[in-house]
Image (tube, rainbow, N blue to C red; front, top):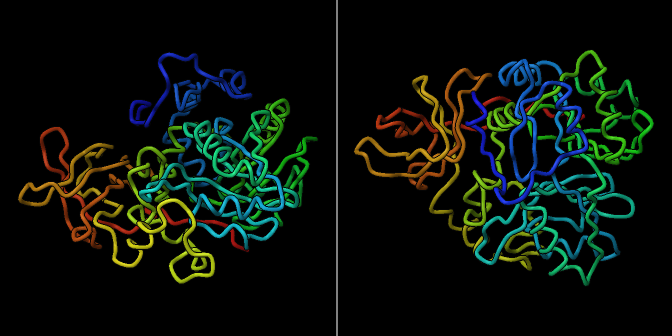
Length: 382
């Protein structure tokens, strides 16, 4: 896989931003690329495949400081946030984390996000390319109900892999007490951090919010652990695709609904039609309608039956050449050792084991609708 396979994005008019770990990336020999307006490491000298396999087998450290971190403060913060997302926030217990998404009036996804209830606030993590718009969205719609405080002075590190807990527990044994989708404040290498047991690889792991001026020292302390190696955006993309996880702006966007995207597991019963706090968020009637009757198009996983990678944008057709949909992410999977992809297909073709064809450089490549994740999730649920 080359850097060109990555879904890169940046403004050509603005200088690229740098994370607090920029100098460390250069010291470690990273190949830097533009991504969501930042200069980010796509891979280190060992290469993307080696980094991918190390994360699956051991533990890898990712710099995800380009992501947005926001505090929502006030007694009505949870209720306020619920007015923007189809997710149960009011009942979220202290120390618990939940996945969610902002929706628009047509039910499309404006961004996906992670929400953690803490003692005195909600911590919301949003995507880098969307963070300015997300903050404006929250200030505009709920800024009168709670305080919306962006946290640009915080960095974010992700330690992922089956041995991540062993490495992190050396810095603070209490890290091992966390289970999947829970979080707590921990001191790591002398820095006050907020740690959640979550991530974007399908593996066990942690995301660590730390003051920007302490991020490099913490990263060095983690990289000093024998299990841990640095990992760039290239492997992050192949790992999340194997895990069947969506990338905003590619697999989901403002024109795809959570139902079409197969994310209905994130919409709790209490927020659905007939639930105690149903509706009340943008696009709720569209989403409830699709929950009741099914969507026209649906996100599916595809396995390639020949060893030709199928990339984002490829058209999916049936045996007669009629268009059925398009690929939103694709790669040659290091773990499965086959081409894998996500695509949106017409609902009557989004059926398990259904065979379709991807058009690649004028040829039709056979693919089969397959369940996701392609590589099993290994989250630690306790």
